[in-house]
Length: 248
Image 1 (cartoon, rainbow, N blue to C red):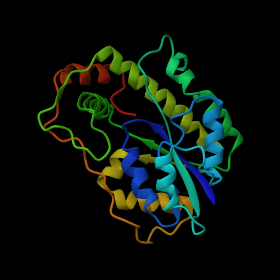
Image 2 (cartoon, rainbow, N blue to C red):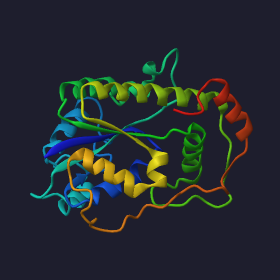
Image 3 (cartoon, rainbow, N blue to C red):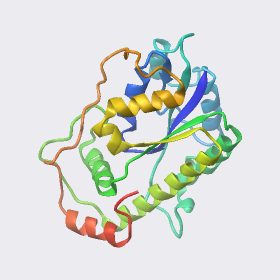
C-alpha cells in the first residue's frame, strides 16, 4: 500500500476533500486520526495507521475504517492538520500550539519517511479563510452543516494577520517536502470549482484508477454563501492587502 498524508491547516475544505477521496474503492482515508494525542505518541499513532493498524484510534473511527479497509486497498492515509494560532511572539515557530501539536517532530519524522506521499491542501484566499474560521466558531457548525443565513461576524484584525502569517509559515514548511517526497499541492478553490477533476488528478498522483466509481455519494455541502457577513470586511481586506497577505 502506498502511504500518504493530507497536510495543511484547518478550514481549508479538508473534510470534504478527504471524504470524497476516501470513497474511492482503492483508497483508505481516515479522519484527523492523530488529533486526540500529542507529542511523540502522535507520530507513533501515525506510523501504526499507515501500516493499517487502527487499534489506537477512537472507536467510532475504527468502526468507520472497518468497512472501508481491505486487501484491495492501494493507498492509505489520513488528514494531518495543524492550527494557525495567532498566539505567538516574534515568530510563528514560537507559538505554544506549535509546540503542543509537535509540528517540528512531525516534520523531522516526515523527512525520515520519504516514502510517504504528501497531498498539501491550501486555501489561497485568506479573507475567505478567516471568514470561514469566524463563521464556524460563531455558529459551532462544521463539516456537513450550513451556516445560518443571517450570520454576522467581526474579526480582530491584529489577530487575523497573525493567524495568516502562521498559516503561511506552516505552508512553507510543508512545501519544502516537495524536494524529497512525492508531493502535490491541491487548491481549495480548484477543488470547490472542479471537485471531480481535482480528485482525478490526486488519484493519478496516488497511482489508483481515477475512473473507478465511488462507493457512495459524498455528504459535503458548501457551508458559506453571500449572506454571511464580516462586519469589518473593508478594514480586514485593507490590512491583508497592505501586508501582502491577501493570498497564499
